[in-house]
Image (cartoon, rainbow, N blue to C red):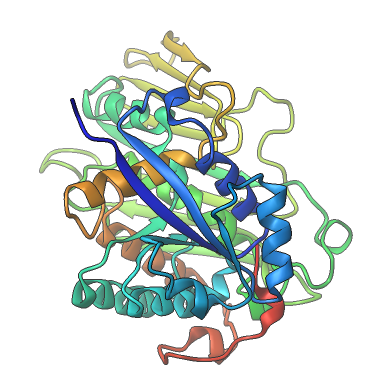
Length: 387
């Protein structure tokens, strides 16, 4: 009989995403067909106070053995915690991940992994030196629907990929729908659409490409800034990728994101479209958690109408939100003694960070030096403890 693997988690941050992750972590793995592992929530840390951590633990109905901490440094020193989930704003990811890695903990860090590519490189080097697992928490990559998309692409279901469109937009008014100190619109917290929303669009583009080399040969972009704070409220990126074969076509991709525009205004607009010379894959719902997949086959020709071959919306079981799948991947990798996930390689997270660096450089999007720095440790404001 196979032994059940127990993985003990600590959470840094007590915001919305931390709450969603904790609730998913505490669901019965059997709901998603996993009888081989158990996730244990052992501790939660809030930089504001120990009481805030206690309130979080009570809110998610964590077991009595889950401890509350008022300092991140206390949490990462706990001997009954194996892996740290970092759920703070982008501005704090590098410092928080370095803290956990230097303490000898494995790390799952929310996207975007860091603020810039240089920080990501330093985290990878630290994880390598410490021989600790590190993965960007791009949870969408581990959803069942994402595995289905990648399988359809690899099997040639839509032929050779030619174009990709991915949009992630909230349809909100930045001046009315966000508080002035919300992390989404504060430059000091690395706010804006690109790092929070655009990262999903870029990852969807990369998933549709051959695994060998997902680096774009050209990156062009345009940005509209939110005047009140200078973060990007709408960003559009055009990328070119080299042909998969010597005689194949170049791939063009558009990855867009916006705080102000809306991705899916009628409930029937695909938010991701992966086009091949034999058909198209369409995803519906927000790109971070698509709810429906369609695969369409078609023949060449201007008047050729395609035939729907796949139309599914049954990927996630009731009672599961979806953040638990990335936790399952961490457990799988640790069981195998891996320090990086084959499904979310460090080099791919680095490609995404480099694309976003290029966009920011070309459009004058700069963040304060204290959150762009490679120095560690650096004290950052406590007010930004959660997302």
